Length: 278
Image (tube, rainbow, N blue to C red; front, side, top):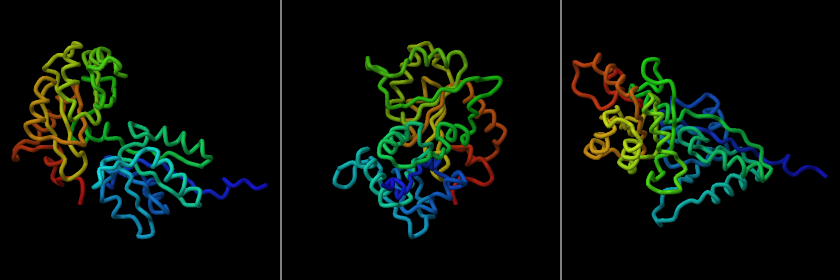
């Protein structure tokens, strides 16, 4: 008897990067143009989706509530990938950033494997790297930081069952490491307080970068003590990444060398070619 899975299509778990279409990998771009269907997250840049051939079915599976206040569940996404693959389609599951950095790519890979669906994972540039770097903050630096830690900002530092060891994170920053927090806009005051209580100096440089690589990119800077109020004052909203550590001070040195123009909100605005997208 022939193997029915041999007639199945395939699924590619693809990272779309932080937003700028030019930051797609060559492989990601090729798979998107060859796909029968693209199941896309809400944060994927419209510029990427608008460039797809008309033959590609674009399915919005973002988990944000729709007009009827219903959310797409992870079970819905899993079934949608498998259903299309079993019809023989070439499917791209498109995720903002990288598929496996807080993107549930590992969970989806497990589900596809359990259903006998052939799949591959295509890395993307995570905002954990892109946001600080395009804003002028190096993640490591011989004189400032020799380690990098990336965490989710959805964790409540005050809950007993937190999966994060905030005292250990504080020791990492205090010893000169760089800490990047993803998806942590609303909990910024909470984790800033937790790090301070863990021993991080209140004057430690910190920055929050909103919509990195988009035209609307903006960077709020300050210290671990002042950044929560500054981000609130200027109205930073998701998606944004926070970077904490001595490396943030390098950004100010870079910008100081570019002064002579009006004050800027991001390094991109200080550059002659302006923002990231056309």
